[in-house]
Length: 181
Image (cartoon, rainbow, N blue to C red; front, side, top):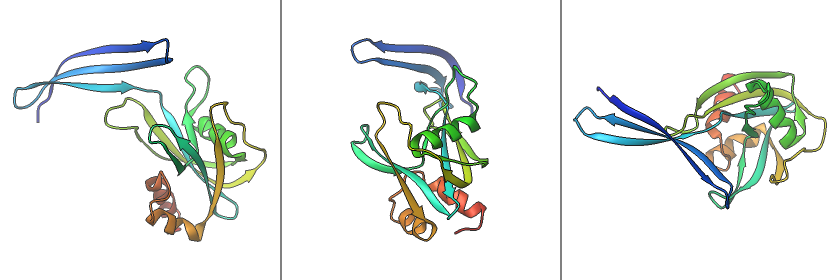
């Protein structure tokens, strides 16, 4: 299939009253059938998620309210990669783990990377950490209200099947990689 890019335009949406500051890329393509179509792509920062296990093989998760879906979710710790610092992806994963849960690890490796969505420039890097130790209380941003949850290995499979955990695909990948399924 031949898609021909005709043009690309950057659009910035800024609203002082709400604090909205969004960047969108408008891409115009000629489709294989000759039609011309616009595609809107969110220009976003990269982010990290971390599948982390304690020494007792408990999965470390976070519970937080998500205004976009108006629900409380149970998911992997994670957050943005700070672009104005020397924050590497691995450092960002370790920082988010420590800030959101109080845990740290010396055993960490990249598990996966993928786009946030098919309509985003941002990539999500997922790390895997073992033998995590709790060294402190959480160090949350003023807008974060997060509870740490530990799920024993024998309960993880059931919670994954029941759809109770966000990021289940990455958790499954981690369990499969280390023959823990």
